[in-house]
Image 1: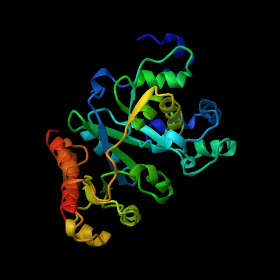
Image 2 (image 1 turned 45 degrees about the vertical axis):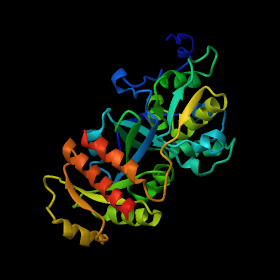
Image 3 (image 1 turned 135 degrees about the vertical axis):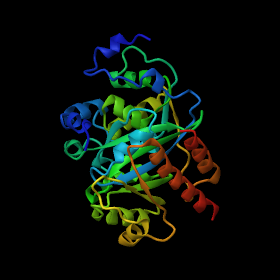
Image 4 (image 1 turned 90 degrees about the vertical axis):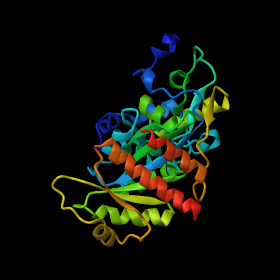
Length: 120
Length: 207
């Protein structure tokens, strides 16, 4: 599908398992994370943190979506959301939620998107 | 910033966005649009032609659906069924960011759709008139989920040219669903596809 496929096929499951401590990402704070939730660090990483946590905090000194973090860190979204759940629980990062889904999109929101696209 | 002490523990230190690709701190919320279509139809090309960043790749796994904690069997299965998704980004203004995700249309990839379509504004079904089969399933599935979509016909040099209404009939599309021709390699053309989707969404919101 893309060049990046190859890299992930090399990924070993044990490494991912260790990174999350065997947890899956379907509960708690991580449950509300969307691919386009923007993550921002509240401060700099502390020495002694799990390296992946520290990397997230370093990358998120400016807002980054969950999808971008996943891409830059080369971690599956499901693994990343577990790590983000830890950092959210410890109030080390903040999550800026996506525009709430509605049955029908809000007119003002669509107009903002149209206006933005017109500038492209 | 100096984080060498922790970085040395990371096998492959993750490189973040280039400075010019960083979002301003004022970025408050994001919206997403999904580009769906078969392999080789031009999803990544379309994303890349309008994206302000070089398209990135993320992956999703099947285990998000519900493998329990401490389930090592699930972890094995997780990495055996990963699939990559390319995506791009457009900053619409200082506060609002649009993400575009390309996702394969084949049924075996539908497990991706839950996290992807939840909260999405809508979808673009990108089609190649030489291979319409994939599109039938995709369109049916989008209608089932209630995801508003438009159809974009990517022009390939050796593809037969079909008038829009022929494509509409072939796909059995409702009259109100817009169909547009496009050249996914060109930014103005890809932007017009997104504009068509937005105007359609606007009309739905007004109705």
